[in-house]
Length: 557
Image (tube, rainbow, N blue to C red; front, side, top):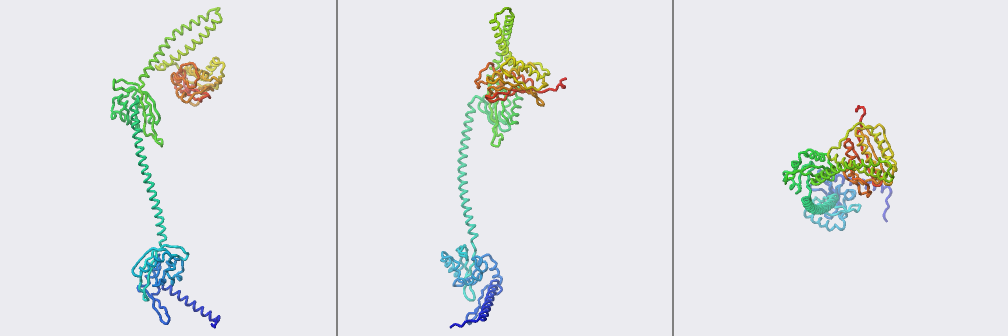
């Protein structure tokens, strides 16, 4: 029967074991830190010396400080030595690593590779990559470098272990980046191919567009030309060269100006460069010398700028249309109107005199008096029409002249409204007048303008009998407005309503007249240094207004 130990003996034995453990730990620490070069170990009745042939303090300190793991194995694969780095790599205390079989760190799938590298390492230096298992059962990639050593007690195998986790992660990211780069390269290559195809298509389209433009430009009966943003001409179509006889080199930049009529040169060039400076559309008339007979022919030039996406002008496109024949026709028509108006005026005056003589006869039957009255009304209309025709002739001849004086515009408008109320008793003409508004002009002509505007308001207001006439002033201008609630005007009509002989037929509302009243009114206002305007909406009505410069009475005295 085994003898039981006393409590005191157990305490003594425990204290001896604690001292031995402390000595062992101190010895291991001394070896690890290079404080000793050799170790004597009792083996039975004998003592055995363990040392490294080339071991010295500096070498062991270096091994301890390096980032790689360092392990020494005996021929059975037992760990004789390990630095702190390897212990940290496998998440074990250093004391637990020494004495273990290194194969415990090698997963089963990699043991064959490890054994092969280890066998080769005993013969010569070798290296290879495998995965090791740490204490947390995590696989960590390592590069193992094997070197055989000769110790006093026998051969040993030195392992240097390099953690490849960071490198593998970098390689993984690099592969991903390379993959993304390749995908990007393929996408760019495809985009480049598509871009090249698109460029070829656009180039072909531009070529065809240029050919089409040139074909059309050379085969239309007008002159076509283009210029850069600064106005330097760089293209002329065939009609230009045939008309002027100038080559492209003679025409480019400002060369085209040499065929302008001397009387039109300054106004045309100024209008052109003003359009460039203000970056707006242009339209003006000028004469060009024709090469075939040296005659100057009237042309109307129209053009507008071409802008890019940012609104910058990149070119100007313009046309010049020969209007010489139209000009001559208009002159012949104006001449006919002038002659006809004068010829009609004499018999009309005689006819009016005869009717007045008949009207003064006593004991006329009532039917005769009625006919004479109606005849006078028709004569007055005809006389008004002839006067308008004569005014148009004077305007075209530049002879629309009249005396001017200081006028109380408010009183003039008030008097005209009263006369209109007698002429159109079925209409309610409301007045909104500021008093004491003084202008410089011709009272008879200004009354003619206002009557024209009221007549139009009456004619084009078939369903509403309300008309308002306003007179107001701002710091520099007097403004007279006639407001109706009639059929209104379209935008297109508003742009042309002051042209000679223009009538807004789109509204399908037929009235008498030749379309001269607003034209004459606009010219009369122009001669007074004023402006005439219209604002209108279809089926809502119109506002016709004209403005005149105010005068200071004290300045006129």
